[in-house]
Image (tube, rainbow, N blue to C red; front, side, top):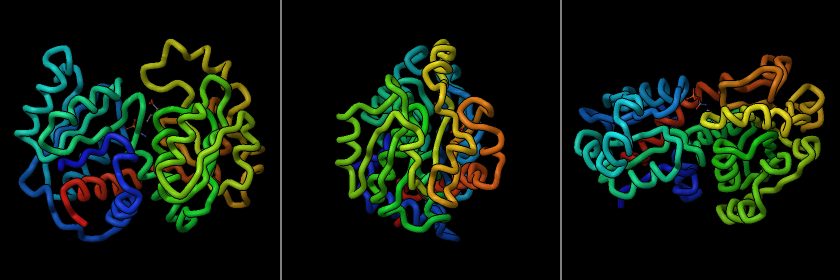
Length: 298
Ligand code: CP
Ligand code: NVA
């Protein structure tokens, strides 16, 4: 069976643990030697492009970056034709897209693994780095409490999957209209030993949390909703007072890019509790672990 990484939930909990182990294993083999990896971006990127390109290089392969408009998925040719053709050139196809269904359609016909490099629904590569960073600082996440404050977006959804699969309790502090529905919390809880909860009170969300995560309030593709979202998320800025309501020594996490003064204050993101640069650097290590796993390294 061809493995895919469209969602963290495409993995079994022990496979997630394997990727996290491979991420920190020195001197991995070079399973991509002499092979290519297609990296298609329909949206801008700093971390994802650079970490994936360098992860491919470190595994002995050759990354081929292409802008979405150049490929023209479903404009110049169908997502299915793009995947079938690129599978003949590359060992892995990775894509950053608007609609999640686009990577699903590519994966359905691809004869090589397809990796989701961010869609409207999920950002699995980010979640790998997020849990890796928390583990490095706090030890195993089983039994730990993790908070998400802000929008229940693609990054939140993937982080929720990873936390539950690793046995953590994740509490989403999101305003009405931007929160995970009860059915979604139940779906998350079904993925592993951990649990997932929602509160509309950010202070309640961060209570006893070892990590406070947030993200921008307006994701790529939602720009027309920006003013409405600024109003909806009023009171959800992660500031020093909110960090003080978390567990002593709690870290602040953000996938970046961040908007200082909006979802987080400069004092927090540039302060001693901030883990965002370690988190960004772990994108390389976790991407390398994920690609090695997809190439069969255990
Ligand atoms: N966090 C993240 O995915 O960043 P980029 O959009 O820069 O890739
Ligand atoms: N939620 C953000 C993440 C950016 C890395 C977005 O989709 O734009």
